[in-house]
Each structure stands twice: as C-alpha cells, then as structure tokens.
Length: 125
Image (cartoon, rainbow, N blue to C red):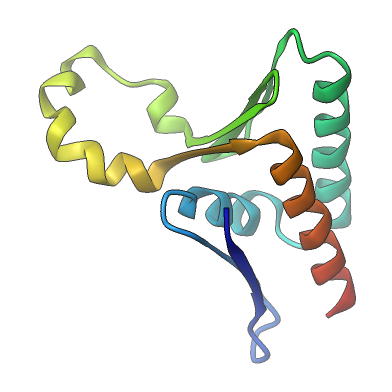
C-alpha cells in the first residue's frame, strides 16, 4: 500500500492519499481520525490489543467508515457495506467499481506503520 501525506497550508487540513484499492484508508484517516492525538492513540491501542488477541475479530466503528482486524488482516470499509441488502446482489456488477473505493484491506503491520507515520506527520506540521 502506497500513500502520501499532505497538509493544506491555507486551512491546515491534513490529507492522506492512498494507492488505488486503498483509497478508503485515506478517507478513514482524514474523516474519522484526523489529527486528533486522542483518536490516534485510541487506534494504536486498538491495534496493539488486536495483535495481542489475534484469535478474535476486533472492530473499530466510526461514523461512516469502520476498521475490522481479524488475525493479521485489516479491513477498512464504509458502514453502508456492513449493512448490505440482499437485493443489492442484483446490482453487484454495477457497484463493483464503487465498492473498490468503499473498502480495502492490508496487513496489520502495514496498517500500524501507516498510523504511526500519520501521527508523526500530523504532530510535526
């Protein structure tokens, strides 16, 4: 997963641009976590807890986007996908492109590295 952090010098907003297939990760960082130190700390604690108890599934539910860790895999997806309706299966092909931007996954080590680098970036700017 490739990513780049940016800060808008006019309004002070932080951005994370992720590679194709991982766009949702950047959106989650920007919209759900932001530069709030307390939120970043909660996410790092969540990751450490999941690594210690990796036999269980762990969910970090956000307003619009949630993170689920199961063993060594991290899944980030819009909450609307968690409540997908069975009728939606008829539109699967049309929605596949949309879903590619609405969900993504990566390894837990990569995810932790991303959060630590985000914390450093938002603290240092």
